[in-house]
Image 1 (spheres, rainbow, N blue to C red):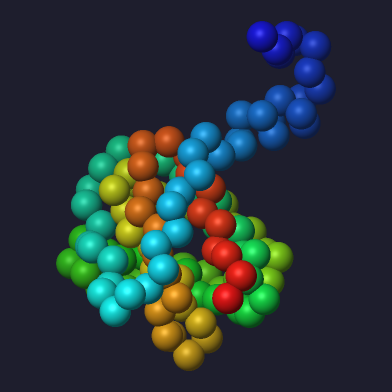
Image 2 (image 1 turned 45 degrees about the horizontal axis):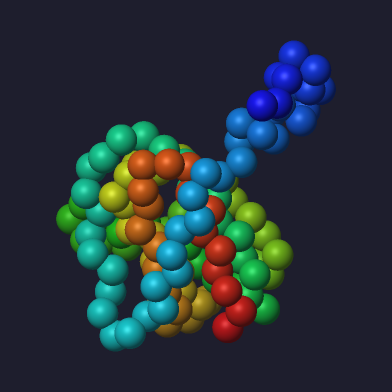
Length: 114
């Protein structure tokens, strides 16, 4: 194992903050993602690896879209969320590109090249 006492505080923080689970990118196929379901507290890290600016929407419990962020290519966003939450990714004209569904662990949501 890693000797945590020997790690500099900054390295330890990076180790603790690192996502534990890579979330599956679900390309938009004509159907919007399912609504979010209340779950346990977790975090999601969005990473925009596409070549365009994108919008990040939370799909609410009542199936409404709530804008949380606009990400430029290369941007990341660390977001508090809950397990079983759906996050829709669109272009700047709100055309859906794909979506993610969170799990119980801190997730990494990589937005792929478009």
